[in-house]
Image 1 (cartoon, helix red, strand yellow):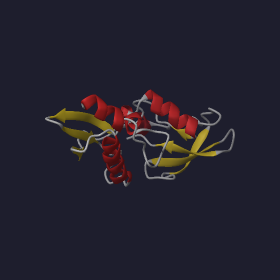
Image 2 (image 1 turned 120 degrees about the vertical axis):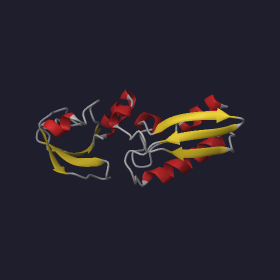
Image 3 (image 1 turned 180 degrees about the vertical axis):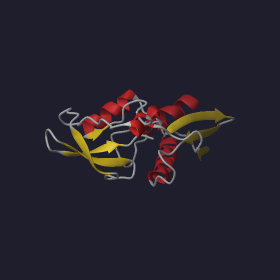
Image 4 (image 1 turned 135 degrees about the vertical axis):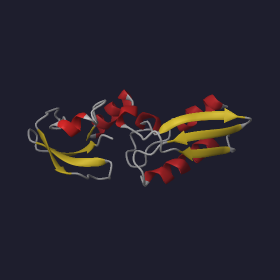
Length: 157
């Protein structure tokens, strides 16, 4: 049952970035099955993320489609989610979708100097931040100085 549940919930997409699954994003923290009951553990990308309620509903629906009706979705805040939990496949999907992915372990480096963000369209690192928030709170709005296109950057946490 655990493998069936894991396979079902691993395919649930982020409602704000539909090319990413919750597994790609690192929001899916675990799936356990005990005595015919499934418990799915998720961690929000940031406290108060409005997409979490939709993710929990989609997880319940995915489990129901897999024939699992006795399930609990548990949200945990500790340890806090980090972009380091994103899969390499998730980073590739973001880039292909036009969103600059965070570099692994980049959150702390951003505190001590210029943050280097490559344009997801042309690859240039000659970019600038236009606004701290983009289309959602977990993204910032950037622009490429080379191709002049604006793009979202998935912020580091």
